[in-house]
Length: 112
Image (cartoon, rainbow, N blue to C red; front, side, top):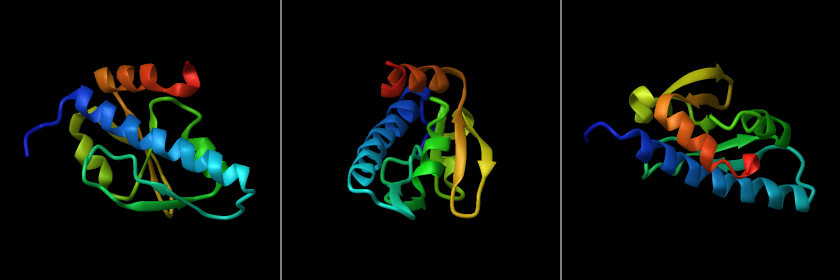
C-alpha cells in the first residue's frame, strides 16, 4: 500500500474518534465505571482493534484535538503524519502533525 495522504489519515482518524465520542457519551449516560471498550483511532481503515480505557484516560487523550488513541504499534499506519507522545500499558497516544494535525483540529467537534 502506498503512502497515505495527510487528509486521508486525518479523516480516517477523525471518523474513529467520532465513534469513540459516542461510546464515551453512552458510557457516561449509563454510569459505566471501569474500563470502557474504545475503537483504535489509527490511520488503518480496516483496523478493528479494541482498546480499553477508563473515562478519565479517554478524556486525557481528548484534551488535545490532535491526539488520538492507538493500540500499541498502530502509529506506523499514519507514516510521517503522526508520532507517539505517550505510551501506556494498554494504549498509546499519538499526535497528528503537519497538515494532518491541522485537519484533525478543524474536524474536532469539541473545538467547534
